[in-house]
Each structure stands twice: as C-alpha cells, then as structure tokens.
Amino acid sequence: MRLFGYARVSTSQQSLDVQIKALKTEGVKANRIFTDKVTGSHVNRDGLGLLRVKVEEGDIILVKKLDRLGRDTADMIQLIKEFDGMGVAIRFLDDGISTEGTMGKMVVTILSAVAQAERQRILERTNEGRIEAKAKGIKFGRKQTVNRKKVQRMKDAGIGATDIAKQLGIGRSTVYKVLKEEA
Image (tube, rainbow, N blue to C red):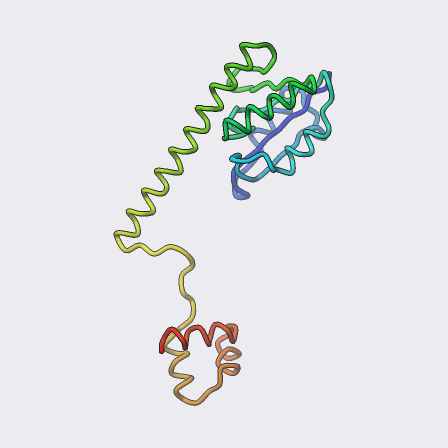
C-alpha cells in the first residue's frame, strides 16, 4: 500500500501550501503529491491525470477536502468508480470519509452532489452581483490606457498612424481602432 496525495486550488493566485502540508503530515511523500491550479468543474487536469496513471491496486489517495477532488457530481462519481475499479481507495481528511466500503461510496456521492450545488450557487451569486454592478454603471475589464483625444489631435495635426503609435508606445492597430471609434 502506497499513499498518494492530491491537492487543487481554483486559480493560480491561490496557494496549495495548506493542503500539501496536511498531506505530508499524513505521511504522503512529496514526490507522490499531485497538484492542480485549475477549476474542479471538470476532470481534464494535468495533476489528476498523472495521479490516475501512477496509482495501482492497493494504493490510497488522500485529499484534504472533497471539493478539492472535484465539483461536478457526475465527474466525481466517475472518478470514484475509476479508482475503485483499479482497487484504489480515496480518503478525504477534513471530511473524515473514505471510498472504502459501500457506505463510504454513498456518502462521497451525496457530498459531491452538495459540492456541485454549492458551486452553482457561487456562480449564480457572482452573476447576480455582476448584473447589479453593470446596472449601477460599473465597467468591467481593463481600464483604458490610451489617451484617445491625444491620438485624434495627432492625427488632425497630420501625423501618420505609424508615428502616432511609436510616439505613444502603442500598437498601430490600436491607433486605427481609436480613430475608427472616434469617427
């Protein structure tokens, strides 16, 4: 029996440190910890893919929390079936559950449905907040950094697009885009 670990965060700005520390505390060797910095809404993840290749019958995968393995119930069930078919168990440290045994599989299935519902609620709240912010006039995306009036004044002064771009340190296509929008 070998111990493997899996840790995941949703974005590259988040840290895996807490999860990795917990896995090491449980006895997982550093070279057997697989990680991803990507959403858990699908199973096409590099770290998870490597883990799937490395584990063998009798191995145990430790994951700090259920939602770190995945957020989609159908994907979670498929992963559990896949690992179970290989003779590999999954233990969720914080949740105190395991896929070992029939009851463990049932509990994991129920909790993965809860994790998916939680993800859907987060997406709904985020979208509602975005719609409300737009209604209040809040703009999203990068802030404009091109002085549009200056571009237009330079063009009116007879300066060509290439020279405008060089002087302002922007792309020529940006100059054309600004001039088109101002027209």
